[in-house]
Image (cartoon, rainbow, N blue to C red; front, side, top):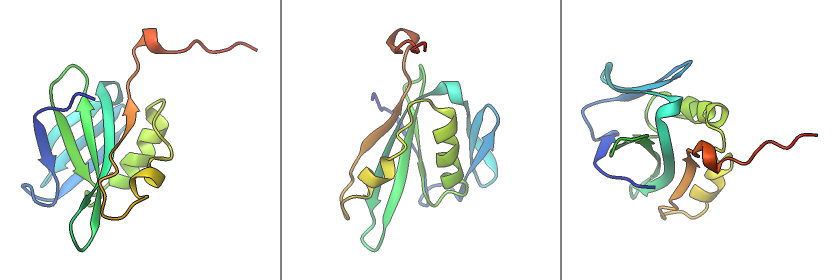
Length: 130
């Protein structure tokens, strides 16, 4: 996963973060203002990890855009984070359905895991007939 130019969207940023689901994708908002709006087809990859905050651990997603050298970080304290997770399971073919077991397996460790990578049409396996 090629991650560059981080864009932080968390409790330490400009304000409360909300993830708004749409039929064709999602929008990330801060203080009610749109920061980014992406279609599902514009998601290149998602990396999940936990950040150790001494008194608690925070689950994070880095969402990489297709054809753009940037990614967006959202954390579990964002309103709509877990609904976004559920939508990813439905909308992104190959999304790792068991990512939580890995990421939360060891306390106080990042446990980073790429949980989704968009496949090029040439990389997809043909559907079996039968």
